[in-house]
Length: 128
Image (cartoon, rainbow, N blue to C red; front, side):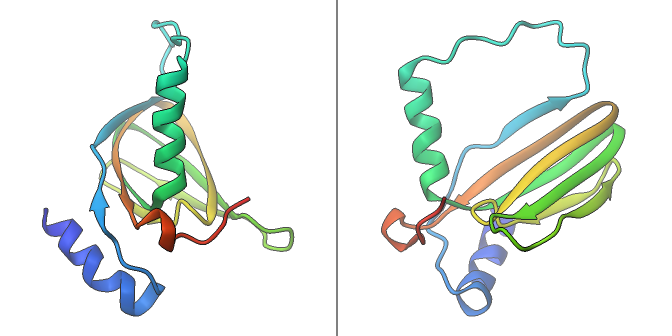
């Protein structure tokens, strides 16, 4: 709750948009042995993710470990290069998910918790 208030107070003056809400938190596993099979995505689940990706502006990730890794980020344009962040357990990353592609490469099994912060869909700039 306090993180959301802090983010909200900074977004409009520094990033030029207003955050309206925060999505549900989620847990990600990377680098595991993949014991579970990936489920098929239904049309309903795809639609839910589509609406998430249409309105999300900021993504907040907290890397729990036990493994470390690298987070590769690159703006959605044709001229910018990539930026790599080495992450270890306890690292927080707050990124503009609507402006950056982001890929995590783990060194061993690693867990992350995260959430998206949203603006109004009508406020969002068109994306590729």
